[in-house]
Image (cartoon, rainbow, N blue to C red; front, side, top):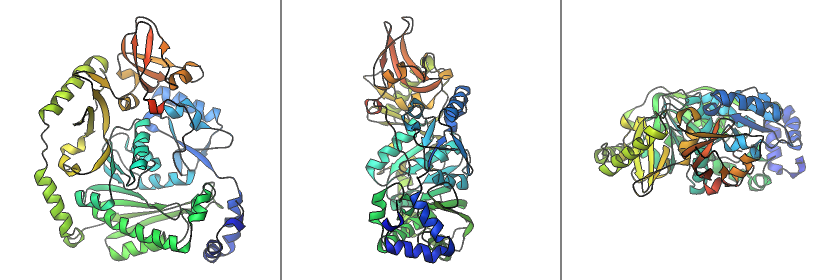
Length: 467
């Protein structure tokens, strides 16, 4: 992109903000955009995962990203999104600068965390990896189609402890006041860091659009404040450069809420670092007063808690017992604990946090594309294991597995949805793996392995997961 293609009011603002550095910054728009991927520690922790990581680093000539231990640059014409390891959830394609936000938030295993504007899933999957599958992560996206993409990425990376919601920030703050140890708010913004990637972002930009984005960010931040525990931390990030959506928003927050302390903030500039650019601020809440949780929030929470019923009804209990009976034979190494939920024929395990200070009743009325780990479908009093379960386990946990090589032709046939010949002694549900990494279920009978990869995943293509 040439400088003259940028809005004149934008270049004028940049020149005022950056002074002598402005020319170097504006010239960066003519450089190729940066590409990155981030390895998934939920997959790479295994021996087979480590081998797959080493192969990927070598094959695509990856170079480390300084601010993210699991992040790597790759260069054109490499296409790691087209490699079968992507389908296996070994890594997530993500713009390098965006990896800075979750690293700064630094969530810990066992915490209760919210990603408030989470689609398509870059920061959610990063947070989940840092949490090591322990604790509760609620990942929210207000737009239903984007929430579906978010849920698909959560499933592909084998994440167990994440609840995907499709709600407004107000709906969440009315249910979860003072609930979260850490909150990630990757705020909807004017997208100045998207200009090299997306020409539409240039066309949509205007000073009025910046003002509108800042107003929306302020509204969302106030709901985030209500949901943050005393002592909790909030990471606020954007992929834009103007102060109005960044430093000025943070100053407004700390002025309005004196118990919010700015711990640090960082900017990644495309003329100084290899990345498209990002802003991240980290804040801590030191205390909370009664006035900060308004009466409407308190009444709403009280009403929902009074009607919530932590008991599991008989149909859910029977469905979960059916799954446990099946798992005792087919998944002897499966040990994930959670609260069973039944949506039609789909059986889920909510993260175990819902046995404690959070109540299932708080979910009433929310749209929930993914209620934790999807473990099974009920088919006329029998169990069919869910694809999400395959992606969340290891081959050492199952009775039967069948491994495909990333260098062979069979994996591409499998990803197209084809059945494969197998030894006749193999019979029943079988975990299909790729160099030891789970990729789907198959069902073996009479020397054939029937393909149970979901139809929507059967076309192997590049996935552009993150801005």
